[in-house]
Image (cartoon, rainbow, N blue to C red; front, side):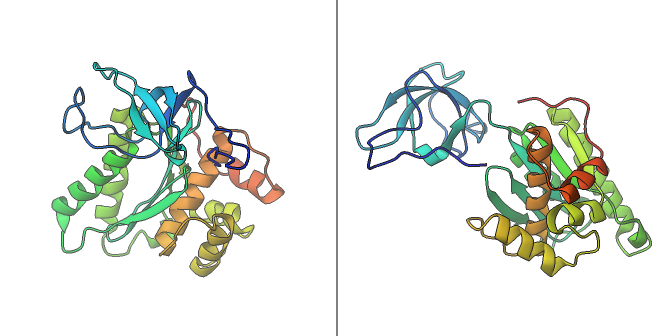
Length: 249
């Protein structure tokens, strides 16, 4: 996804007064927004004014004071932009990435058992609220006898339940299908996956294979949701995934 940017040489701006937008950056709590809500990523609003030195005044929906909040151009996207979240679930290092162009990890450190599951779920819920679609990597059934399998299975279903309660539709991508999407080969290794996603998203800092997988999941979901052009390998990959019947923006 490419966010519109201004052209300094021409003095033009990507948005005009009255345009509907969504935020891509959180903002601190402000009057009219409860402290636990603040202004999260994905909040819709309307451009109220354009700053003389850049940036925009945005009237955020449901702000009872109707005071414009300042956002830079790279902190806004058009209102119809699809927000897709990629989740590479793990008990030790869950990859999280967005079609908006970022990736990071959830690392529970010393937590174990229910405390670990709760921590991962709470972090994912915090990310997922504004998203139109969440894309999860499916289980690798050949690893079903490994230690931690039952806890991992619990995490998958708990996260899916949390997303369902938030009203975020879920897609499931088998591991080999995700590799096919990212590299053109269903048996690609972690290094190949990371290299492929780094090449596709040079502006995103990818520090682990978990982040690379999550970014591939978000990329695949965004392409499916927006009916983007696909390579033959990507077309086969899309057909091998399980997609929700309905998504919302």
